[in-house]
Length: 293
Image 1 (tube, rainbow, N blue to C red):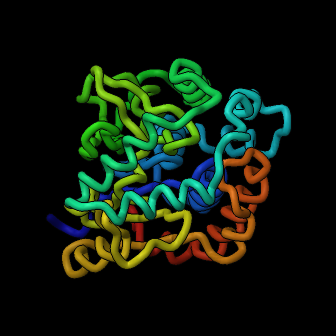
Image 2 (cartoon, one colour; image 1 turned 180 degrees about the horizontal axis):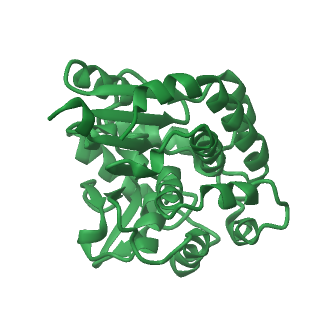
């Protein structure tokens, strides 16, 4: 493969409502600088990144980003149905810690999370959750260019990647990928319940390991290892020497904009603005990395 025909991928990690806004701020600003991220050979979306990936693929980043600054945005009204008065970040972290301490490998650990996700009480039904996600998507069919969306089977912990060839409704795939255990209900696809793809990895960047260049957006630092799946530091180390990578990791100002609860609607505007500022600072480096067609 020559340098003029190098395959490129964009990996968009999880990060809740704040992460959606931040990633859109980053991507829109980079594209305003003439960086053709919409021409990526692959877009991988996990949780928040699955929503942003669809927006990127359908070419409506600028319009959807503008909605992050509108208090009367219909998407915000829809998400307010699950404003998460029942959700506790502390309880979620305790649940993850308990799942990590159990026996077995990565799938077994994820299955323990799945049991908690299936048992959790919630204020939003599965049907309403899927309807909410459907209202956030710019289109209901899969985009023409490759988009892969990650999820985890809540029954057995198996990792799944949905794409246009899966025969699965786009809104179902995105709703499953965004299903934070205890916050929103697992989504049934072909009879099996699925939860947030971030329960394996916040980015699942290893999916793009066969591509020549991989741009990764991560909404926060990851631990050096995890009982649930490959972490971003592990993947970046594994890719050295065979794949060029560029990481945009939420900086201190962006993390401050996210606050302590990334699922709150109030994080949208400050997170989008933080993403714009951070992208402007690295745009020249990203342009050099991404290169021309």
